[in-house]
Image (cartoon, rainbow, N blue to C red; front, top):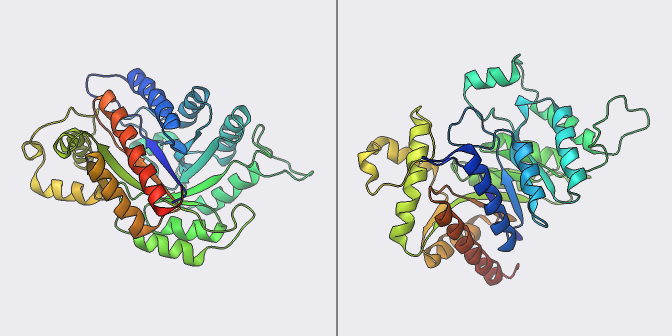
Length: 335
């Protein structure tokens, strides 16, 4: 494992506002920078009452301007919602303002429900143009030929690193074919993780963007002084995910002592499976469980995420997680 990073969904807690969430995001990014995280990524979601990062490039600019060294980027931008030229201009501007610090992860899903997707795109294409859109985006970041009729300004020549994101085998195949780094959303869809790694690494084709495959996996994390406290804090995320799965998204709930009073056994089984690529507990437990994941899947990079209602507890969780991940790096000799 070369690096460890942090994915923040900028959660809006029950009793809080989007302004509170965005303030908390910047505070978390500063903690991540101080604790050795390599990247701080934000994700595009729309029509979600509990997520404040819908205007993802704007939030990235906010975080980048409030930090100094950590890489900041999208994990990711849902490219079907946007014209590639617009995204190239947005991230070209971010890279111009913050040289050498901006990443662009792109996904194929809409990041929302069908009605909101229609509101975003207005005219829905019947065919899947994602591969062509990725190639177009890459060209906008490249050095433009003299006869180029369309240029991203700013953007052209910034060479913003582009990642393919995915939760199935499609993204792994595309990233390998184009020779791009690949990140797998195992923090909420771990079923095809091992297959995706194998396909990506075995079929990777070197490119001018990347000579050898570079794979990032995602894992949930919730660390606290004791295992019981961590399980209690994590109940907020489990409850939020269950409500989303059952068509009732909302703000990040307060933690509860007994989830069985809130979630049926059948839904809980689905939630636990979806969020199984994770580590929850004391520093020792988190170190052990994240170490097991790293040893099993051998990612080039691990990105962790986790939503906790109490902001102070969330800061402590990611500080403890950084300590555990630093220990794992040193043990594996890749620090």
